[in-house]
Length: 196
Image 1 (cartoon, one colour):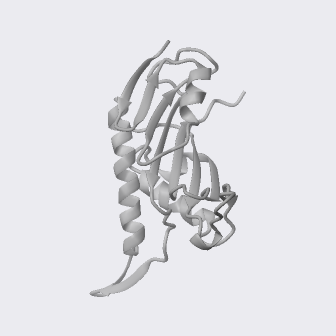
Image 2 (cartoon, rainbow, N blue to C red):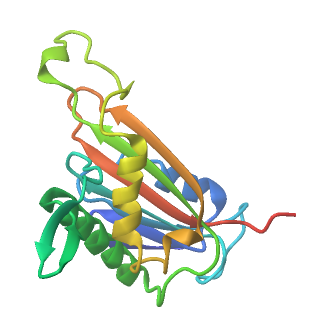
């Protein structure tokens, strides 16, 4: 049995078996949940193994990367992020940094990495049903999935890994949250296994 330690409203587990880790990793995310899971194929895994995964949830409506704003500064033209994008990236960087510190991880991830992003948008009040609450649905409107991924990657770059070039696998899913569930973004960063 592994050792469990509480982190705010989340949990991180070291040396737990695959079944236990899966149960922890896929519980419904609520509020500012942080979970750091170490596991691989039912065996105990050292803390700094290549199979480390970090998962965290940031509550609130996902914010995509906005169009840059341009302004003149002397003889140069400078591009800057719009304020909503800048604030959102800072929030992602903060919660990722907190997750890393609470897990006791030093330094940044090296080598090829994968990211899975689940972006949940609020269910419009006009679509609410009294008797049968609306379940989770696919989100097929703006913002684009790649712009959401850009915000997340920019927020994590320099915090959990050195450069976006390390990302060799990227999965982005957009959803309309189930009726009554809050909007949020769930991010999971993991090291890629060596190809055989």
